[in-house]
Image 1 (tube, rainbow, N blue to C red):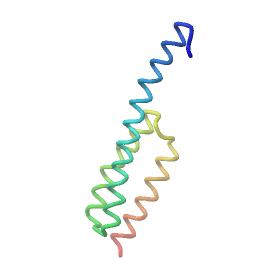
Image 2: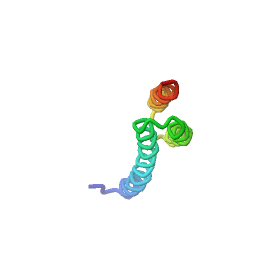
Image 3: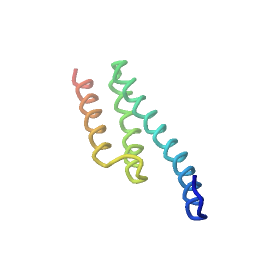
Image 4: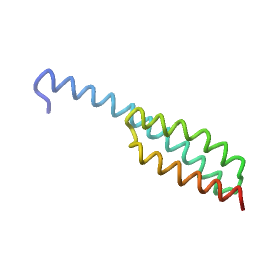
Amino acid sequence: MANTPQAKKRARQNQRRYAINKARRSRIRTFLRKVEEAIASGDAEAAKAALRAAQPELMRGVTKGVLHKNTAARKMSRLAARVKALSQA
């Protein structure tokens, strides 16, 4: 356990950051799940709308340090390809 005042403060800060980051990750996953569900249902318009809503959420995760830039880009690319394939089929 932390003994010095500085270590105790860092432990408190880490707890707060953990809670905030956990909420952000959960929110991002919710948006991604909505896209997945729209793709699974076969509704191209709903999938496009869900993807448009998910994109800024993913990028916000990058700027806040929750996700790595390339991870978010990879997820967006794969989802966009699946939505595009759905709308063409």
